[in-house]
Image 1 (cartoon, rainbow, N blue to C red):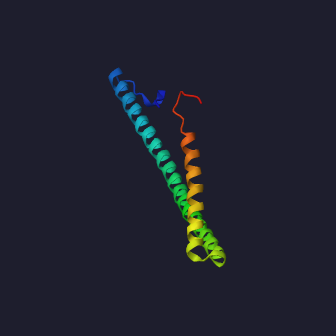
Image 2: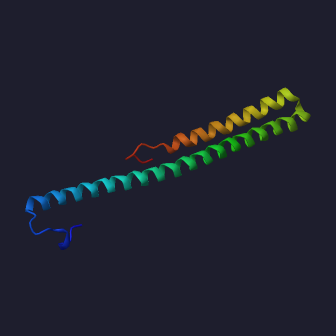
Length: 114
């Protein structure tokens, strides 16, 4: 920012305009640098969150797999391992189908009502 003491008495208007233009350019560069820094900070935060969500998803799927294997083992004592596997797989697929149908039902095109 120019102050009265920065202006020499023999400087003309063109010199002042050039200095003002340089100041505006520097301000623009500073604004771009600030925007880049904020964008980088946000990207890093989202990347870290995505890593944790990914790890949570893997662990959650592992827990579901362990549960299904446990159900097969528990049911195998009653009906045998082959039937236990078939029963658990079929029930799991039926539940997955119901959840998929509900999900498709939630996909209503914009502007239409049921």
